Amino acid sequence: MRHQLTLLREGVAMSRRKTERLLSLVVCLLSARRHLTATQIRAAVPGYPESFDAFKRMFERDKEELRELGIPLETGTNATGDEELGYRISRQAYELPDIRLEPDEVAVLGLAARVWRRAELAEAADGALLKLRAAGIDAEDDLSQLRIEPRVRTAEPAFSPLWEAVRDRRPVSFGYRVPGRDAALRRHLEPWGVGYRSGHWYVVGLDTDRGAKRVFRLSRIEGAVAFTGPAGSVTVPPGTDVRAAVRDWDYEAAAARTCLLRVRAGAGHDLRRYADRISADRHPGWDLVEVSYTDTTWWSEHIASFGADVVVLEPSDLRDAVIGRLKGVLA
Image (cartoon, rainbow, N blue to C red; front, side):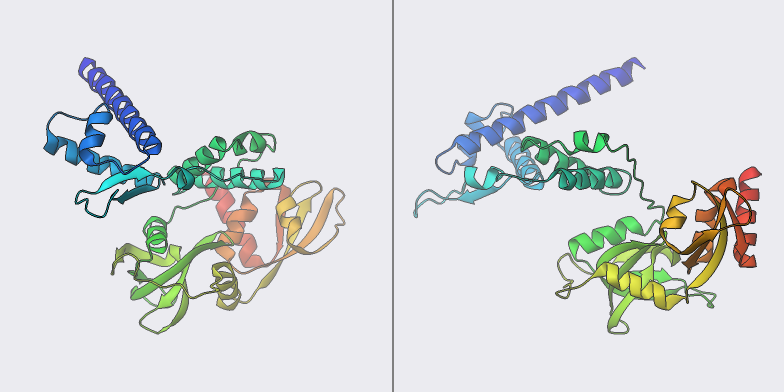
């Protein structure tokens, strides 16, 4: 335990020294009126090692980290005859412009950040909120008054690599299970975007084997997603609407069915929101709600989450699926 505490203290101290060095480097390059060479930076910024080779390695890592943080690090020379490159940070490019957001826009940004903190983009979300705070806007404070705690499920193992592929514009391949086939088929895709609909995640892109746009449900992807090309090699067609593509595919994949639900008065607001028709039930304190759906598996899970406040009257296969899930919870 004593050894672990020593390592923890050393790690904290190293992190603090690194932060101080990076901050000093930013201040130095921001205040410089001309490009500073590596030798000049080494002399002006505290925290770098005495060995020049060790300094070069640390300085390269620091430059990369500043660029990843979005700090506009420029390289150049001060005169035509200069052979050694210098570095500086343009104050005009570094400073944020005035940000003017309406209260509802601030709330939406904060809500989005909370959603993605529970998915794959926690680091990016925190960085965005930090930049907003630097501009005098605290989206978290505005959101806390709404009493909203959103959640996004990203249980599919394929989500993370496909999100990276979309972000980096990289082609991928993966095994895809098609209903009616025993074995997964190998698909090759140039991904354009990832979308969410009716409880499922989808990826949209160009199926290079078929030369046409295709939509794939992530829950049907089997095995690992492999990158098959370099970053930047995928071109997204102008005007691509990922949400529309997913919505159209969802409608075509299965004909919409209608279920009849008995919903307790004052409950089931999410079901009522999408209802085709709501009418009074012969049982006092209940309503009859008709809703269209396409995916029995997801819809049965969703209805089961309302517990005793919702009873499925029709169809029988949906009712049996809900009963099965409720029995599984009790077991």
